[in-house]
Image 1 (cartoon, one colour):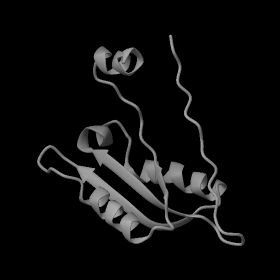
Image 2 (cartoon, one colour):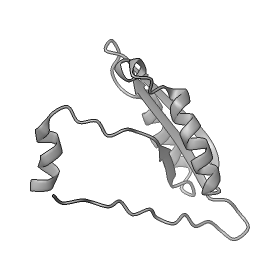
Image 3 (cartoon, one colour):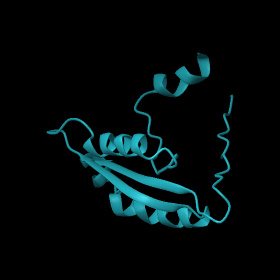
Image 4 (cartoon, one colour):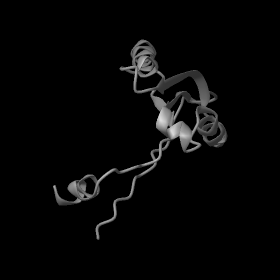
Length: 110
C-alpha cells in the first residue's frame, strides 16, 4: 500500500510581524449529527493557529443543508484573499470521509 505524506510548509512573514491567515469552517447537517460542529472545528484551529503564530484576519463559515446550494462563506473568503495578497494562509479542519472504495483507491491507481 502506498502512503502519501503531506508536507507542512513553513509560514514566513516580514521580520517583526506575524503572518496573516484566514480561518474557514464548514459543516453539513449530516456532519452536525455526527458531532462535527463549527465550534468543534474552531476549538481545533484556534490553538493550531496560535502555535504557528498566525494572525487570524477573518473567519468564514458555511453551514450547508440539503435545501441550500452554494458556499457563500467560501466565495467571500476567496474574494477576501484576492483583495489581500499578503494573506496566503487558510486554516481548515476537515475530516477525510470516503463513501466508497473507488474514492479511496482512485488516487493510488492514477
